[in-house]
Image (cartoon, rainbow, N blue to C red; front, side):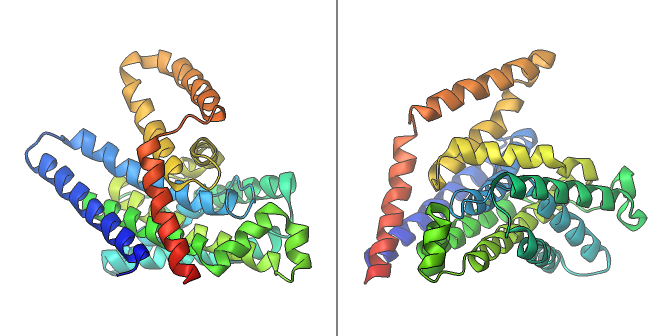
Length: 315
């Protein structure tokens, strides 16, 4: 077995072991329904953060409308399920619909750069929200009800593992290196014959697919979805997860997403004061992030996993 194969086997074994431990704690009642919901929300947010990370940190494109693809995936999966399609297929088809929108939107908009791209994607997000609010078949502004609670911990956990594996393979592939070259210097990449628009659209489409996956899981977890849950404030949350996680750092992105998902719930007993404390803690976390304070064991594990893949690719 190659070094990369060993690292992959260790990662999968650790993932299965973690799932088994958490499932046992849930079965024993040591993790109640409230904590289960938080754990599932963390897994969904990690999928969203990693898909945003692919676009922002690996392709260098600032998107402020990523939650629109989550909305498309959520509504598409719920609507497809209601016409009699099985749950798993509904999630997959909802993700594909989101990816199609990602391709169609990415093709013209990703010719823009910097602030122009950020403003355009934010506008796209608001357009999607307004459109959904005016489609009565999707519940309109009141939201879509009657969605069964099909999402469980196994679905979100292994969807998160699937996302980590696929995106880590993408960024280590030839296409991933082309995306990174676009981030580093788009003009130099074009001079070397790299079709920068193609790889930006590819990253945008793949990111939209996984955002749609997260949206579908979210819809069947919450059993109710409404348009304003997916506005640009949600996209800004995703950007915060990615920025605090570090540049292209999977481990940091997962850690920051976990912390920032738990933090509002941990501050809930403080009532209105949490609206002041939470942003202050964000500022402190950002200062620590600037000083390169990180979680060593988690970063080292992903670093070894990544190096194994690089050696295997070179071979």
